[in-house]
Image (cartoon, rainbow, N blue to C red; front, side, top):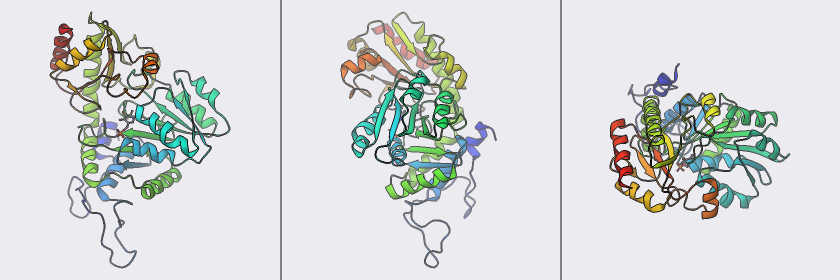
Length: 381
Ligand SMILES: *Cc1c(COP(=O)(O)O)cnc(C)c1O
């Protein structure tokens, strides 16, 4: 089955009890038993719920995994992965992770005896050099937020596999429309399904996908015992979202490229960060491992001031100034005061998150309106 078909039909069946074409919202906490322990596969919705099962099957299908899991948020999915580990285990992670992932690693799990080493994943050798006999997990996010750095998934997961280390790829920005990390050697794929998988900015959810039944059992146990599950209504919304993932991503990528090219040629713009532009530092690896380049991009103004950035952001009409990304509507964000405000200023400037850096989640609106909006506000500064 091709990807365009898989997003709609992958591992799906019509509701066996009624023939309903779309899996209904089974808004129930518990299921009747005919005799103690005798039931139709469902007992209690923390363990499993048919709407969530349908979504989890879709998650598995789109990432070419054997099993998928739906959590109450992206971070709940990350939390589940870390619970596979034991005190004194070591984790190697990229040095410009999603801020919430970094916060969970350093503020929540460090105190339970997990040790995190952060390396620049642009060079896979940095990963190899950081491995010790206690390393149990490599955490990779590509492209990164907000500067869209791209790391070589095959090179890094093959280092992990040679050393019998699990590898996780946070595939939130790219989605399986663009890259399928399990096929490239990763042990686990993680998503904030809040973003492109859900796709409509109406749900907070996380996903894990694996291709190994034994690991799937361990994850299911943690999901059940830890309790951070996705509810039936949210599962229904995300399942509806997944069905249009391919067609949405096609438009996100087309619009993303056009907006990137428009900005790159604008006299008031200093730099555009988009992996599909030849000027991007990781263009070569991006071109090799990504089927397309997505709808996320960032840019800096020649006037690298907060005043200029704020004026631009306050006057946008089609783009909405808001955190988050991956929905059908275009969003703009000011990393240094919004999504990345918790990073201390010197550190932030060192990474390249300067005062005028603006991150765009390019939606699926008409490209003329998107470019028109940006053109108008750029003329105002
Ligand atoms: C949003 C996001 C997360 C966290 O997901 P939530 O659903 O907000 O908990 C993790 N990784 C990336 C890349 C994200 O963009």
